[in-house]
Length: 241
Ligand code: BTN
Image 1 (cartoon, rainbow, N blue to C red):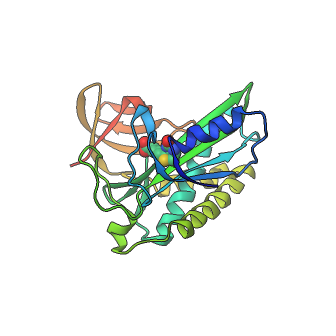
Image 2 (cartoon, rainbow, N blue to C red; image 1 turned 45 degrees about the vertical axis):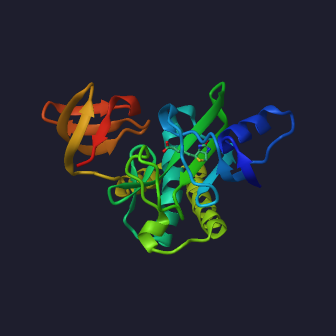
Image 3 (tube, protein in one colour; image 1 turned 90 degrees about the vertical axis):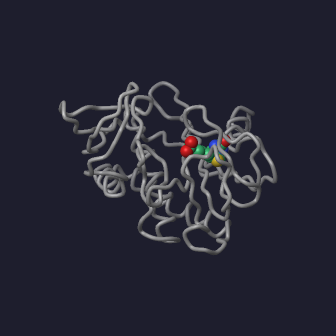
């Protein structure tokens, strides 16, 4: 379904789910314009009207053990990265946990909201925002780039959306088939800054470290001068040059 204007496609799907009618697995809601787009960690998601992809996908991964939620994050990230890699260049990577990067710049991001009941993920709202045909960004948007800035031409939004959905479906089917090893390996292969010594900050202190892996449940593992350390999203910042 394509909406002309909505606050946030994630909220729209959430509202649909709270009305009594069932919403089908695989439903996609795309907005041409979002006036209250939400990003990770309570940030706003900015997107110029009609230029980009802002959409949410409903999945019902009831087969996935609750402790393996991060494998869903991996599968979705891989779907988006493979589709954008095919559309642009193989330099599209995932910055842990699920930012989409081209070189050192952010092409887009993913906001997954899982609704858990007992030990099951009943619904997962997968919100995806990607910069496609926008070339001017407000100064408060850190480090942006877009498909147009890479290709120097416009890209058809609907075509790209269907390529992304097809790629997400392929990775989601691997997840459903329990092919975790393959998903985890592919995620690491696409991981931004893997095995490179870089600058990070944690607790207001900056330090050099190397990403050496990601725990099954999603913690980032860094090798530091004080040994191996694990971080969650709130505990670590990547410091770009
Ligand atoms: C991030 O902070 O990097 C995640 C951004 C996610 C933005 C998308 S746009 C479609 C969906 N609806 C929202 O309100 N947010 C997500």
